[in-house]
Every structure is written in C-alpha cells, then in structure tokens.
Image (cartoon, rainbow, N blue to C red):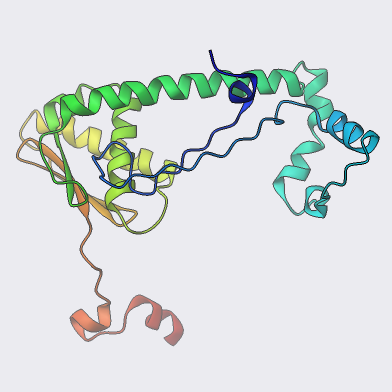
Length: 223
C-alpha cells in the first residue's frame, strides 16, 4: 500500500521523449505536493505558530488572474455542497479514472500498431483503430502527435476536432470514399491504404519563397 505522502501527492509526469511510442531515452519528472489536501488556513496557522517563515505570492490576490477570481466563488460553492474537501475528493476520483484510461490506452496500443519507427512515424491499423472507444483512440492519437510533432503541446480542443474528422473519414472509408490528411502541432496524420500514419510534418515554405508573391503576413502589412 502506498504511503500517506504518496496517496496525497499530485504527480505530474512530463515525458521528455513521448509516452508509449517506444522511445529509448524516456525520462520522467515527478512533482510531489504532499500538503495539497491540507486547507490553506491550517497551513498558515501551523507555520505562524511554529514561527516558520513562508513566501507570500501577491499574484494569488491579483484579480487579473483566473485563480484569485475563482477563489471568490469558494463560499458560494461551499453553500451548494462543493467545499474544498468535496472538490479534492472529485480530483482524486478523476485522477483514478485518468490512470485507468491511460492503462487501457497502453494495452490497446499494442493491438492497433501496424509498424513505424520510433521517432520517425507511428502507424495504426485503420480498421482496428476505428473500433477503439473514442477516448482511447483520442489518447493514442495525441501521444503520437506529441511524440512526433515539433510545435509544442497538443491542444485538446484541436486534437478532438482532428479526431472527429478522422473518425468521419474512417466511416466514409467503408464506402471507399474515405481520405484524410491533416496537420496538428507539427505532425501530419494521414489515412491511406487501410493505415493511419502519424509523422513529422514537412517544413512549411513561405508564399514569397514558393510563388514569388507576398506572404500573408506581408499582405497584411501592405494593407
């Protein structure tokens, strides 16, 4: 059984080489916050009583930021039964569900992969991929794009839009009309010959280099 500190820890795993894509140099950073479940007022009272100095971040009270504004809603939420303890319980349940879904995605990945080299491409069997639960398919697609793309984190909303479009193409493919090619976060996703391929997107070329005409940015300046 895990220790109290481990159970209370909020663990953030930041994979530096992509998760589940067979990377050979995967390193993980663990962020442990064992006091996260303790109310702030109790922590402050304990520190003051023990005469332990602590940092006070003024941005925590700055209404320009979302977190301080949300704190003003805490009394209203508590009156509706959503106090800090209940919200912490909800967070623990969500983390538990998230871990279960990730484990299911790990197991599903082996069944749908159809080749591809680590760090170069990821290839999924289209028919088997189409039969996956939508959340599992979304996570596998997101992992591949995050591993192979080079334009930063994958935005969930954009990933969901891409996955929906891919799902429509997979459905149309049953009639022989399904084609798909779309880029996201520096990766390109292609549906062809019964396979879904994720790989690094080609380097973009500006309009000035390819056509001799002003690029979009230059046209905006000219206006």
